[in-house]
Structure formats: C-alpha cells, structure tokens
Image 1: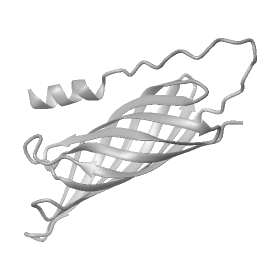
Image 2: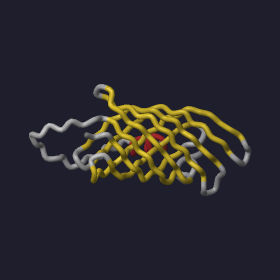
Image 3: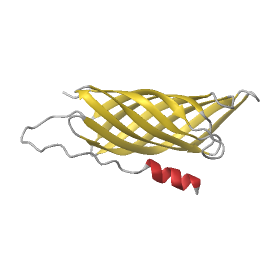
Length: 170
C-alpha cells in the first residue's frame, strides 16, 4: 500500500499558468540536462536509505515522446552504511513556457550498491520516477527542484534534489 501511495504522489501533475498565446513562432529544441544534489528518504518505507543524493540526467525528444537517461548515487549519512548507485531510463511528458518547465518520467532502472557493515555488494532492478519543476530566468539556464523515487526489492530511495538546468534552446 505504501508503494502505491508513493507512486501516486510521484505522478501528480503540476499545472502551470498558461503562457499568453502570441503569433510569434518560436523554434524550441527538445533536449536538456539537469545536475543536482539533495537529500533522500529516512525510513519512509521499509528498506529505504537516508542520506545525501547526487544526480545527473539527460532528456531528449524522439518524435512525440520524451526519453530520459540518468545516474544518481546516494550516500547514507543517518543511521546506515550504504552506498547506492542507480542507472535509470524513462519515458515521460513535459509542460513548458518561456520561464518554466515541468516534467515527469518513469522507467526501469538498474540498482547497485554496497553495504559497508557487511562489505556485501548487491545488484537488482527496479522502477525509477522523477518530477521536476524548473524556473528559467535565462533562455538556456535554469534552477529548480526534482522529486525522485527509486523503488526496488533491496534498498529504495525517495527524495528531492536542487538542480541546475541546461538546455539548447535557440
């Protein structure tokens, strides 16, 4: 039940104020990258790891769909000795205007890590999702926040990151 609740939270759509429609044609390239650092969960669900999280993601449009590939790593700080890595891919949607970008993605991931107490390595698969809200005061650069979840059978992570956004908008 907790997994279902967390997945539902991750998929809440965030509606932005619609930009004024105007007759100017703006050509927008549909790719961007984010880099961020933040915090992950502390015992929200069973077998979660709390700590500092670092992530880097790349997003690109192919046809009408948006695809994501990324990497993140969580270092436990509070009450644990775990290092968790996550390589994820996903498909999603975006909403944007001149100053804001909002997007959500979900897809499979490969999770690996080490539990330092036992010196044991583990590998597993899971589902990763993220929702990002970005303010773009300058055309190619922005700052924002990203909510993320990595649900798997070994050690899940849920949290947020403050992110720097870079795009190739022309």
